[in-house]
Image (cartoon, rainbow, N blue to C red; front, side):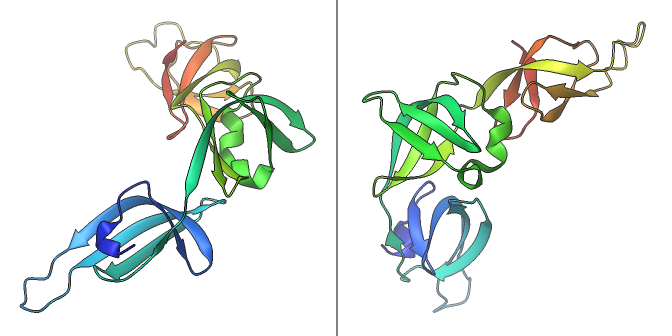
Length: 187
């Protein structure tokens, strides 16, 4: 596949590793005879390391077939995460390295996930855009301080910390954006 045919979301092979294209920046030189350059922002599958790669439009990259299977989180097997396929109920075992920082958003029975597979082997997981988590520890609301809307840290049931509005208290269930890790409202 030529560089000028690659779209966001494609999965390609480069230097013996598999990468997903997250962003593309096209640079067209103004001088005659200049080649169009494509700057790709790639993320490793698995692992998520970032790579910035510049190619000319006629450079080749091999596209890799990445399939996604709808799944829900079942349980932890030691350190590994076990997801169950929503259609055929097969189980996918993902190591903590494959799940990475997303582990802080995974709770029992979490649905709306997609296990990413290359040649039948799980290489990553895509979580739903928002998850609902319970606040287990945060400072109490300061009376009379509502006009300032100062955020405060809150520890959630999975162990991650996010900033929440002052009125959120222990036991409240909150929406958390899995892409940014930011508070998204009460659930």
